[in-house]
Length: 160
Length: 408
Image (tube, rainbow over all chains, first blue to last red; front, side):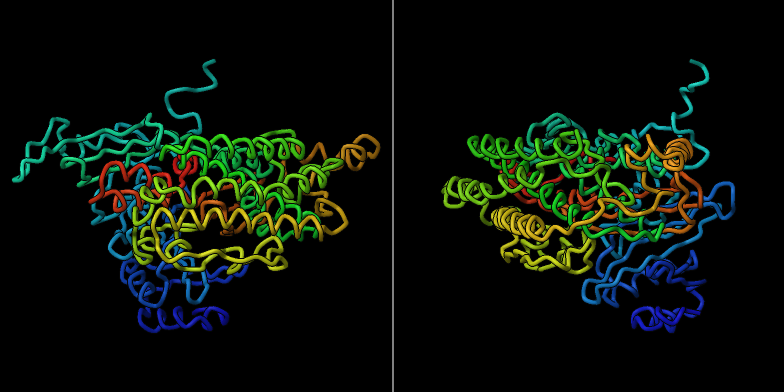
């Protein structure tokens, strides 16, 4: 399943052995290891990779593939300092837009998950305090979705 | 940006007294507090003068830069990267350019690479000067502020000489540099960098052994290395806690591997250690700039890629082909092969990463900016809690975040 170069990374070959069904596909495009992880397996996979040395979570973000389904790709940017390797985990998230929170694995996930919730509307289950972070509390809609216009819903250049 | 009182069920009224008769209260620091260096609001729960709980509230400077990038072409989006971190404009230009070049698989000529290193290090000096001046001023050392801004002014003049802009430079672009470096640039930089180490001595003479500064900074704001890494903190803060991790060494980009410099580290992990690390980094940056000046390769300042790089002005006016390329590039932009890339660099504040996704068109499909300040600010609450409110000012200064970088 894993390409040859990724098999050479001990943490990733151990991951494939430990969680046989979790890795949907993998690629090594542009020299950046990328693993597609099954949505319901993301929490155990992250916990396992942290034990394997990926003690840093650089960030979490999402990509909206609207109108394709499943709509969102949630992206986890992991970094192992001792092996000096970066790995990207990706999850396809269709309706309902819900995913397990990884705040229990890395505390830095807290704000990144809030940001993805705020700007994309993906809900992270068991997050300690999932509320908007960048937009005002009473904001309607999720600005980074592709069906959200750049100028917002309230104003339109056409009216001017 | 939200309403933490309502969400967290806190009442703005005084919260009564503890058993020992210390009054509890809720203090709203910011969003317009001078020590936050931007628009940050921190809600602080106090018992007497001790902070029992801190809740940072961000988003006041959110301008939707990532969303706006999706509406512009790859070429136009460079101008937005300047505006993310207004003290490290060229670092953001560089990171974005490297990410796009990775997708384009474009080879950059050596002169452009070295020039980028030189400018990135000048940017580091610029950013550290502002940090040193403002964080020392927060602790009452007004003189340092004026000294630092004097040197920074000269640096901004150098940036203006290169790009025509003091701050929003947009000078590093996918494919190389925006313009041929101006005549006499090397003399300006050389003059500046020759004087600079003496200036750093001056700052150190004012601060390093100053008893007030020592009392305010030593042993203050400590967090263990494990905690810092777990909260997503990067850069000088990690090095002040004892880990010699610098992306310029561990994942070299733009030919940093050809430069000789040290990674300053300290083990104390307090505000004073962060001060020492950053001051030493300024000296190391000056060293790198000197090496770049001495070894600057000859050659073009941008890649020979007419489908990406705007043609030379002279050629555009005299050659039909160059004029067509210019028209196509400005009117339609260049297409970037479908794919995604994550590029990291060591910005003055730590790990700066651009995650760019292309669908093969002339506009970015998604640009995610992993900004160092966003990670750093998550460590603010644990650093505050259990400390005196006066220490919070020293802590906040030592974190060196830029709110534009946090909110994007």
